[in-house]
Length: 503
Ligand SMILES: Cc1cc2nc3c(=O)[nH]c(=O)nc-3n(C[C@H](O)[C@H](O)[C@H](O)COP(=O)(O)OP(=O)(O)OC[C@H]3O[C@@H](n4cnc5c(N)ncnc54)[C@H](O)[C@@H]3O)c2cc1C
Image (cartoon, rainbow, N blue to C red; front, side, top):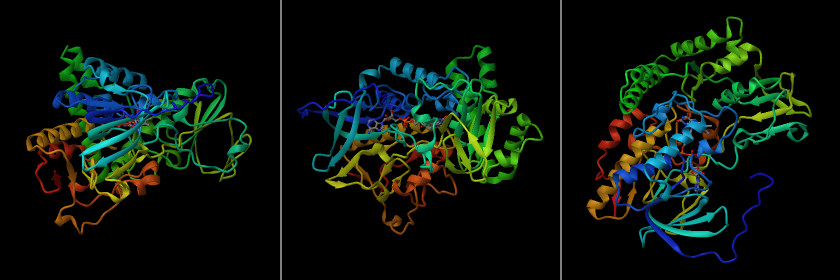
């Protein structure tokens, strides 16, 4: 909220009318919009509404407005399987929003979405087999009530209101401006300014080349390096097919298969021959920065490839900024902020007018909504996940949590197929409630954190892992993060298997 906006004043009398839908989708990001599409196609008889807390659709791509904001996945796979992507593989937030806007428009989804509707609580009643949602209208403060048979959580995984900034000593002493990329001030003037960007992930890699030309100088200050893949922002095969005037629907499918095959191979190599992958990745960086640059210090992570997202650098723009001298890397730790900038543990001082804290997100487990099941509060960290989408003891609810090593949206399409199949199965069985439950053979199964930190360990997950649902050691009881396996397994799941309890 900017300083000039006023906060909504709650109306004196909260309205008590309740509106019912068969399905309620929480959130109108790429997951919620995709889910809405699939519902209209696969379960056309279901009534549904998408409740979105913000004033427009897009989620991540609506919230983030920092310079250069773009995807780091290719849009052939970050796009939906049902809507061809016709541009360059890496897309700006604006292009992604425009693509989503077309999906909404072409499929008449706008009438199903209610903006500025923030869900604050969800109560399940087994007596009525219904969820009751309390919803706040963020423009009027009005309290609304909705009931639904099924809650489809597409609220993402991080808090949209505010990013994560660690507390450093002396931050208050700094005389310049401190900005988090998640709340980028529209009028931030960085022309001719000295800028430090704290962080080493995809956001830092995006914001730095976008700002470098205008700043006096921009410094990336990182505690430890990240892996990057610099490559041209093009898909040669798609361009060739386009030149042959092949139908875009075909091009989309072919480009997806090609990219997914290459990614599967990259993932396999990252696990089976990590040293060779590391050499390839560092070699690509070296090609931009030359033989004398200290790649070992600034671009050689401590972890093996793919333990954190590998950020794609279109046309090597970050490295070209460094090679030109407009941007530089510092790998060190912060001792404290000072009036003029940052004192590092090494004793070096970095002076700045603007400090950008590209330090990540604040994990939000299920949209900060208070959940109860038959009046008992739900602590998701005490539940076990069914395939990273349902939770033991929580009926009629699914959460779309995408992939780390493949585009998030691939899972939106797969989970939608699964849930729509489940809905149609429940209709045939004349049942209204489905809960997943551990089977007798799962009783002694060791329960572990949502994801193995050895396998994937970004900061926001490490900080919030204790709040996330648990996983077991069988494919049914974990988010395997393996798109290629799930693509085959999910359509074959036996919906009458004993882990599904229907009533
Ligand atoms: C800068 C950035 C770049 C990224 N780039 C990629 C990429 O290239 N490829 C990739 O695969 N992933 C990427 N990701 C991860 C990305 O977040 C997901 O891919 C995807 O956009 C998530 O979509 P979503 O719809 O599930 O969640 P979100 O985009 O987070 O949208 C969730 C929506 O739900 C709404 N909401 C939340 N809580 C409530 C509530 N209680 N009531 C009502 N509404 C609510 C939010 O307002 C929001 O609009 C990126 C993330 C960030 C932050």
